[in-house]
Amino acid sequence: MNFSEICFGLRNPESSDFVNVNGYFVDKEILEDYDKLTKLLERDGFRLQLESAYRNFERQLSIWNRKASGQLKLLDAAGNPMECPEDEEQLMYAILTWSALPGASRHHLGTDLDVVDGKACPEGYEVQLTPAECDGMFLSFHQHLSELIDGGESFGFSRVFVPGRGKIQPEKWHIAHLPTSRKYLENFSLEGLRRIYEKTEIACKSALLDNLESLARDYIYPYFI
Image 1 (cartoon, rainbow, N blue to C red):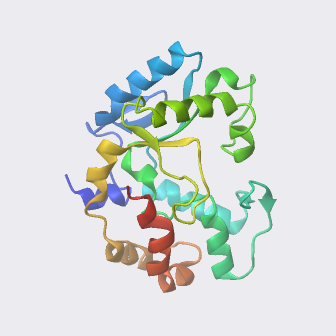
Image 2 (cartoon, rainbow, N blue to C red; image 1 turned 180 degrees about the vertical axis):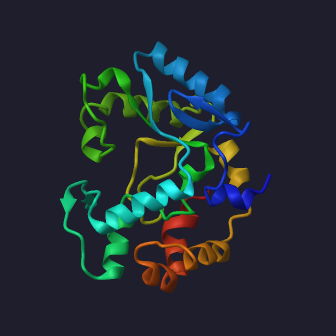
C-alpha cells in the first residue's frame, strides 16, 4: 500500500481497505473498535452518529474552493458567519480556522470520524458541527466521551483538535483512531503536497505555496500525533 497516497486522499473507498458504515466509508481496521465504542455509548444512553469519515482529496478541495468563493459559509473562531476577506492570504487563514488543507486533512486517512449523539438531534435537524452544538444539545455526549477518553476506555479513539495544539480551532466532534492513523502518517511528504498544489486549481494557491512551511508547522504537523 502506498502510504503517501493515503495522506493525499487518493485511496479508493470502493476498495477492500474500506467498509461502509451508515453511508460513510471508514478504514476496515478501525471497525471492531468503532463497534465497541458504539455499544458502550449505547449502553450509557447515547447513540453514536457519524457525520463524516473518509473524505478524498477532491472532496476536501471542493470544500476549500467553495469557502473561498463564498458558496459555503466562512465561520470565525467562535463559529459565527463572517465575510470573505479580499486579501488572498487573509482568506486562506480564514478558511483554515475550520477547514483542513486539502491533501493534509486527517479525514483523508479513513481513521477519523466526526460524531454526535443521534438521540439528542431534534427531528429533521441538520447537524452543523459547531462549538454551539457541543456546548448545547450535544454537551452531555461530549462530556461523557471525554470521560471515556481520559479513562482509557475509548478503544483507541481520541480527540486530535484540542486547545493548545497548533492553530486549528478545537473540534470536540472529531475523533481519531490513533493506533491505525499513526502508521498512515509516517510517509507524509510536504514537498509532495507542494507538487500537487502547483498543478491543482486551488483557491489561494500563491499564498499556500508561499507559506507552506509555516502552514505545516501550525496546521499540519501538530495534529500528526
